[in-house]
Amino acid sequence: MRLALCRLCTHADRLADTGNPVLYGLFNRLVASRFPTALDRCSIAVEIETDPTEGGIEVPMALRLIDEDGRMLTEWRAMFLAGPAWAGTSRTFLHLTLPWDDKMVFERPGAYRIDVVTELEPGEETVLGGEVLFVVGLN
Image (cartoon, rainbow, N blue to C red):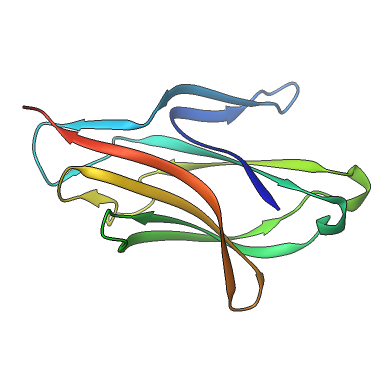
């Protein structure tokens, strides 16, 4: 299981006719006039690649917002269902609307990580990767 894509964007969706992912307005910087600040409504797009041996498995998955001190500020959890084994190596596209809760607040400027975490074995978490959001203040 590998993270193939993790990007913040203004909007993420799928094309109606093909189901192919579409991302609009990619970004990695939030400019704030004052603190604390929060994201305007946006999306995070995640694509996870799985091997045939992982086909059809269901595993806990989380997206976590982490500050520069390594503290988890908030977390979104769900079950991830890998594509079917007969499909061979496959990619599963997910998109989530941000902010997902009222704890997604940035108290100060800094580099904030959004980690994609899975738990293939109970109690053994793996960080697949993620995205960094740079929060800066106007000077």
